Image (cartoon, rainbow, N blue to C red):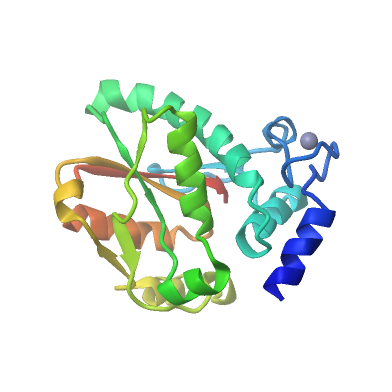
Length: 215
Ligand SMILES: [Zn+2]
């Protein structure tokens, strides 16, 4: 199945769903035309685009589930611009300097099945695009318990319960006293990010903010 998928992907390379340019499921130019989310999340979560938009949703879905990795770099480019903007403000106001990226982890089982974690791909591309200005703190977090897909759980309270104690901080010496930027593809209720942030703060992180492609 994996081999067949790989062959199909060679035969049908990724192209932008809007302008048909080759290389990714959506190109940076077309992504930048996509509207921001209607209602922003908590003040520490920054989301670039509205997940209800089909083009955005499809591009994320392809990156996440169909091994179409070309869009990771596009998302990273878009996030990098937003992160720089926010950091320039935060570094002045709150001494938020020298941050490390913490991609939201998936469980080992899911990673094995999928072969990669889309948030890690985006974080890695962010480090590359920033020329190492923003370091990718691989392994700041790990997922310790398998959870139901958040999208299948409707109520916020249930979602909160679902993510409780699913993350653990790794490399505490790396986290202590540092500013962290959580990176994920999508946030819905913010429950997953809130839980990840709580764990990082408990491990001694100085301040934690989050960036996602969509909400
Ligand atoms: Zn395009």
